[in-house]
Image (cartoon, rainbow, N blue to C red; front, side, top):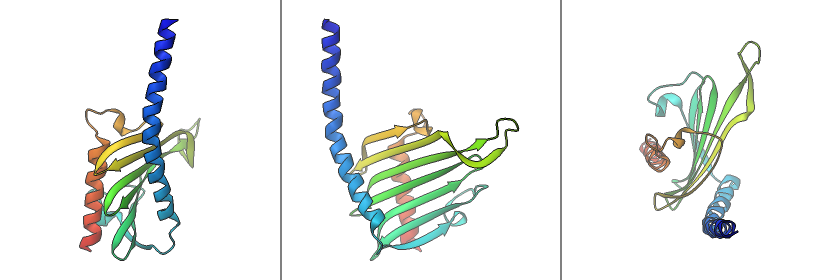
Length: 173
């Protein structure tokens, strides 16, 4: 009985802390939805040869959404033989605030093992990463991804580094 009460209190206490962060994360998501709906943003597209060290077998692109020289969103699309990665970087006042990372795996034919050209509903990843002052403060994910091995991959470092690199490419050209 006592253990049940302690567990219930621990769960309630942790939910309250997560809810406070979720409010901030939801505010950022609402801001990003406004960016997505802003039809006045201009687009500038770079093909994979212009921003990638190694080109992929199914292409890649980097699309900047900007207004008056200020970047509000960057979409990085990378096509690989077995899956597609789409990362959307969002900025507020020139600072990274949100990254949406999606990975779609192609289905394989059950008998031949060949790719069907359709995306699998089971093997999908969705990650949402929220930043404040270039520091990751909250994240939510569905599925498995490269950041599960914290020893070798760091979402905060990878996304802030990529965002800076992409922004420098935009302002350089």
